Amino acid sequence: MSRIRVLNIITRLEQGGAPKALLETIRRMSFDRFQVDLAAGQTNDPLLDITGQVAKEEFSLIPVPALKRDPHPVRDLQALKQLVQIIRNGGYHLVHTHTAKAGFLGRLAAKICGIKAVVHSPHGTVLDGYFNPFITHFYAFLEHLTAPMADRIIGLTALEISQYLQAQIGDPDQYTYIYNGIDVEGFSAPQGNHLELRESLGVSPDAPVCISVGRLVPVKGQDDLLVAFQKAHLVCPDLHLWIVGEGVLRSELEDLAQNLGIAPQVRFLGWQDNVAPFLDAADLFVLPSLNEGLGLVLVEAMAKQLPVIATRVGGVPEVVAHGQTGLLVPSQSPSDLARSIVQLVQNPAGRKKMGQAGLERAKGHFSIQSTVGQTEALYHDLLGTPL
Image (cartoon, rainbow, N blue to C red; front, side):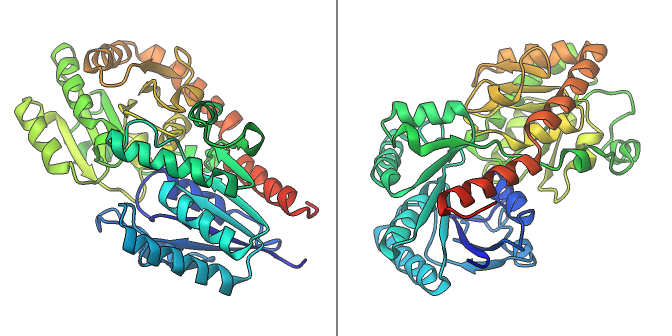
């Protein structure tokens, strides 16, 4: 066999964890041994779309116009036909699907085409926090139906795997987990002038700054963060909050900040192609999500030596070591979130110690080199080819 031909399929390319994690991996794969293509559907929100950026990458990007996140029988059938055509034309040895919708249609298309090796990465469980009960049960049914079509299912964490098995999705021997990773060494290097950045945002050099990064959508819980920040600000009046991200809830969240009387202390910074300078200029990181597969942004924050306050959901407890690299709190509990923010704001020495521990944890567990190596090894193992 010459180069191994791999087709990755993902529902949409937008700002967020799953597309970012996939792209970080693909970019670093050995193109001497692998020819990697990426088939992607369309995002519903043009503000979040990163397709234009991805089109400049070294690997081939193949559009799947009918592939969209929302269920639609006619359009989904069109997407299935488009994927079957792409797979048949590409002569692929392995198909790797990502996220729920692409996972269902992509595995079905690969089965129709008789692909030798099929891998699926859910990128976190859709069983909690994302959809209403009806849609959640529907997606669980689809996962149960298509699980046998995958030779291997890659979870982000051991907890995610246990959740799928508890829901009777797939067999234990189908599962493995591979942590998402980043270029910790490269990302940890200081970027920009954080004093100038603070000044441009109206923040004094000594004022504490909380930062949160994520899509402005319900599952990310930024409304809880704003309520928590109001409580924390009463105790720490010089406290500021930066929210990096874009999404359908932006106007609603801005109105909430105004109604809570904290608008002067809260900056909505929109999407930033490079979040690193903002992390460098902040003092602690907060992630108030209702659910997270892994929370790659947590790894980025730890690489920047920021202590982390995060909700105890999904795979987050496998990233944040409670009491060592940060603090974990229950989801949808602004009071707990506020107490943790105040605790760290009032303890600069504790913040520094947690930040240093976070950097070491990021280096030891969440390097992109490890992610890529394990992924490539899995491909070789399934195809029976030498490393």
